[in-house]
Structure formats: structure tokens, C-alpha cells
Amino acid sequence: MAKILAVLYPDPVGGYPPDYARDEIPTINGYPGGQTAPTPEAIDFTPGHLLGCVSGELGLRRFLEDRGHTLVVTSDKEGADSTLDRELPDTDVVVSQPFWPAYLTPERIAAAPRLRLAITAGIGSDHVDLPSAIDHGMTVAEVTFSNSISVSEHAVMQILTLVHNYMPAHEWVTAKKGWNIADSVSRAYDLEGMDVGVLGSGRIGQAVLRRLKPFDVTLHYCDVRRLAKEVEEELELTWHPDARSLASSVDVLSIHTPLHPQTQNLFDDELIGAMKRGSYIVNTARALIVGRDAVVRALGSGQLAGYAGDVWYPQPPPPDHPWRTMPYEAMTPHVSGSTLSAQARYAAGTREILECWLDGRPIRPEYLIVEGGGLAGTGASSYTVAG
Image (cartoon, rainbow, N blue to C red; front, side):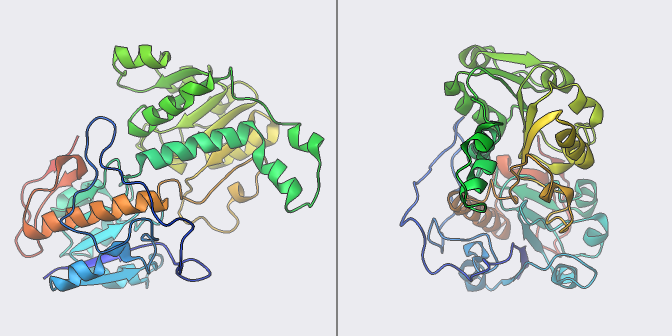
């Protein structure tokens, strides 16, 4: 029997919700490009309920315990005596989320001899040290596409929030109890007619481009792989061969590229300085793609008119993190991919992956980041790194 350790974010401050704003959510059966939504054998949760927190348990407890497996759920993941570290040595499977990542470092993986599967409930597995996972014979999987559209909608929302100066205007009528129209509109513009670019044109980046097209903006993108000619023509896209060319050409830049050595700290003082004065950056990808203090300096000098992000480093950030107090920001905690709609899909996908792995059946290829061994004690198989 297997031990599954789920590291999930804490419950709401007011307790687990007794009811919800809506009685149902739309059923999504597939995604653009033809990939189907998760197809587990069954689910033991109500779609639209809060599943990603500790009490939600991703709807996994009945399924796993009915099969004789052990499920441990915690939000305690930091420090030498964390629940994560105490439970790891005899754990077979770790389930985590990008919003509250269980950082599987080389040291933690080495301390977990039974660990054979790491599942990201959502997308983005850079909290797992992949070289160590490969050496350990682990499988690393994520629920591809489950929350891509959720993130793209959030990015568009943050673009509009910055350009229209929504946050200060909202503050005038709430925190300040005022009606200061001149103050509210003194930094407000229309998105219409602006040049808007995305760095990274994968699933999320393409979804952002498609959602921005009706705003009558000029669209740009940069990616190592150019999109098909018919897509470029349909969306009237301008392709840029590198980040500098893109950044210097747009008024608004939305980041959707993975974090890797070539993108870490990409947006430093020099690259931000190459942008138009008064540009905006939205980052729903990974915080380390931009220089933390470079963003603060650029907002202070006026080089950037606004910065909105949904990602921080580390997560959660310390109370004195400068992005909490910098001017002209529209920051959120890492929530863009964890709407109640998205949770229903990534919880179902997590169960689908577990069903396959526990039954010795292949996990669908689009979910695999690294394919390794089976249940602890069976020995690690040869591995592949998924494309």
C-alpha cells in the first residue's frame, strides 16, 4: 500500500465554506487543440467546491482510503521540523500545487527513499528538482491545461486593472471613503490602440493573445518556436526573435514563459530600461523571471507605469517583501490558476494520475514531465524526460 502526502494551502481564515456564491460551474470537457479534460474513473467531490486547501483534500481521501492507502494532508512545508520533512522518509507520492509549492529539493528527495511520484495539482513543476528526480527514478507529472485558461483570464484582468488604474480608484471609494475622480483618472488610459505583447506563446500565452484580439490592440509575441503562419495571420501577430526586441516595442508586456536558466532574472534593470517609459508588465508565470528590486526601482522612477503579478519568490513571501508596498502595483497571491472552476479540473486530473500509477497503467503522455519507476520496492525503471 502507498502513502500519499498532499501539501495544500491553509483553509480560509473564517473556516471551510458552508456554502458557495454559485450553485454550479460549467462543465468543461475539452481544451483548445483537442486535449480532453481529466477523465478519472469517478470523483468524490462536488465541482465548484473548495478543494485546494487542507480541508478540501483535493477530494482524494475516500478514494485512497477505500483502496487501503494512507493520505496525509498538511500545509506545513517550511523549516527543518515541518510536517513535510517529518513525513517524507516513508512517503511514496507527494502532491503539491504551484500556489503553495512543496519544494522537492535534492536534499528532500535524497531523504525520501520510497518517493516515486510527484504530482503537481495544476501546471508548473519547477518546485521539483528534476535532475534529482531523474536520478531517484521518480515520475513527475502535472495536470496539463487544467488551469491554463484560468491564468489567461487573470492576466487579461490584470492588464486592464493596471491600464485603467482600477486599484487606486477602488481605494478612493472604499479605504479612503472619498469621491476623487481627478485622482482616480490621472493615471487611467484605454487599452485600445496600444501595442501588447506576450513573452511565451504556449497554451496560456496563446489564450491571452486570443482574448486580447477583440480589444483592437496591436499584438506581438516572442517565442523560440514561431506559431503557425495561419495563426499569426488570424491574430495579426508580429513575431520578435528575442525578449529585448519585444520589450522595446510594446506598451504592455505579459510574461508566460517557463522559468529556466535563460529566463531567470531576464527582466533586470537593463531590459526594463529598454522598454518605453510608462510601460506595464504583468507576470503570471514565475517571479524569478523578473528582478525583484529592478521592478521596485522602475516603478519608483516612472520607467514602469505599473506592475501586476500573481507569482512571488518564495511562496509565500515574507511580510516585508517590497512588492507588498511598492507603488502602482496590482499584486495578488498565487491564485490565478486556483479558481473553483480550475480546482475541479486539477483535482480530477490528480485522481486520474493516481488511479493510473497505483494500478500500473500508463499516465497519459501530456501529463508527464519525467517518467520513472513504479511503487516503492519495485525498483526504478528507465526514465524519459517528456517534451
